[in-house]
Image (cartoon, rainbow, N blue to C red; front, side, top):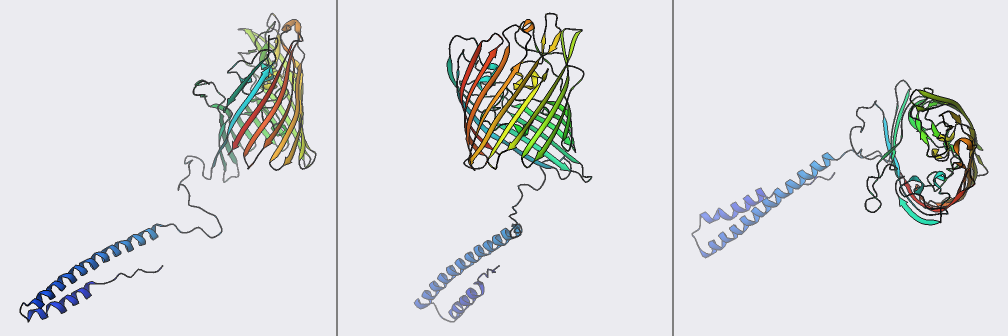
Length: 456
């Protein structure tokens, strides 16, 4: 660094002053002497100005040296390192070396819907995304309406640690805003935060709430609608204990039972759960061509219409699902599930129930099957499209259920998604869906669903 050398005018000023004043002692006061005295006064003013400038220079030098001393050492060349935001971890009570991450997405959904037999009730889930069980049937006239919301915006927090022993710890909490309304659509459109996932992991173990093991998330379709093939997809989040070993995943999960009351009517969620959790096992085989996955489930179903009068039945289900690559830009995704007592796991538990009940409260596991098949095509690095069909069908005992329960639902979806830059998606999806009752009465839904999403 170049050193700043301040001027030293004090000695020079003193010498000039002495040279000019000492001769004045030997001469009498004359006009010339008075002129000389004026010059001396002028020189004194100049000297004072020089002294002031010197003081300012000294102050500037001190400030420069102080600032240079306070600067951090430059980052090593080529590392791209930057000064940390803070010197200490934001998780001071966690295990040493814990990595904390945050992410989520901002998502806007807007749609125009036409239903042939009346409208879907405002404020219900069927107005926010495709819910086949909400399609009106038997109404008097068609209706068209539009909706928009940001309820599926999301925020998540992760923590992960590798201990000195090599053991791995992890945790996740994830929220969205698909909760109850705290305002109204006329003014604030305010909604409460909703817990999606909350679990911890320890090596191969998982404890907490997340996707059911009966759900193959790797075979989900690339939909603009929040779920997409809702009619036939297994889609459940619930508390569980899970163990993973290579291609095998085994879990025990919450044993909730849903009941179709005698004669029809709204579903009943059993108030007294089974003492035996749902047991699910999955095996997945992966290759360069994609993957195929097989799952099986066993359940105890329980209903207590009157306290002390327990009724139980056994449920079971099987599933095959996967993804097959047809090239670098094309793939097929599919899932087929079947069994008895699996209604709660299919279609967000909105189509059919696990069991049906007779007049005395005795229950029988409801049989049925569900599935979807979809084609995904990447046209360019920024544009992709999907075409898929989804369906579920159920074996109701109409002597118990009556003719007003759902026999089948199915839908066709076609979409295009544009990603102008990474993590930013704009999509549009055309949806046709139909719900048919055991009586043969049916209703249709036509919807144009648009979406804008930024993931971070």
